[in-house]
Image (cartoon, rainbow, N blue to C red; front, side, top):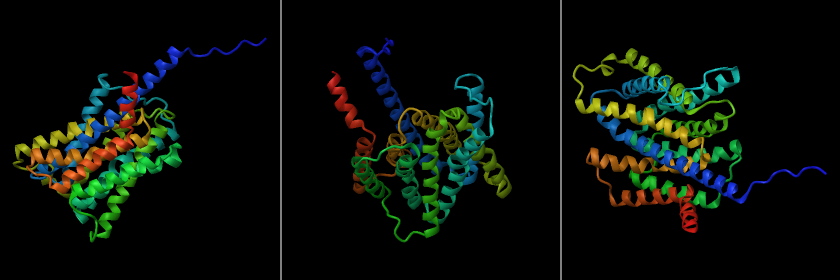
Length: 325
């Protein structure tokens, strides 16, 4: 008689389910925190522009962030990147992630802002959250539910109301570049999850690779094009504080939080939580810059929050939590 395979006890199954639920909550919380950090970068950039050029802001903040993340990894505060056995397939995938989520995305957004302006770009660029969900279907085998599509529709309308404009009449080249940038970052989110475990591309390693392109390469370009904007003679103190805020915020913790999310939850849930970005940007801008939301903007913020709650599964968690009490 063949021995029967051991089966898990109900207690072990329940414990495993509880651990999985905890991991999902951590993943969604990390993505929401990343969205807030990313949202804070927009008003901080507006302040930093008083003394620095857009290219200098990106180059300086990401170069400083690269030094910070590398130092934290070396000292063991952050998990050390797995750099052993950097095989050709592993290096190629890491390089592609660094291009999609790093220098190409930043350059594309900067040019789009120059052509179409920040409002139009701010509406189109966050579409990476939706595009990531769509890319996850063929690349990760994830399923798009009708409720998710409805939620993203609410978020689209909310973002348009929050921005106070729609891309009608905008320069076509700027809209195309912003959409291409959104597609690159959406693909970056999905591929980071697809390749992360298989090729040992941990969050620290991917973040460092991204910052290399966003930082030293863009800083060198800024020094060549206009050195005065990199090291201005008399920068405003507020501009320096804003630059440091971007360094410790979106350039460092934002990237690490995003990687922590995609390793724990489906790309669709990560991208849904990232829809909080324009809401966070509007609220922080109101506090820092004195920009007040119009009635349409308040409605838009509410629609985005509703879409995020539905698409990320927050409502189902509340129902599950009630059932466990």
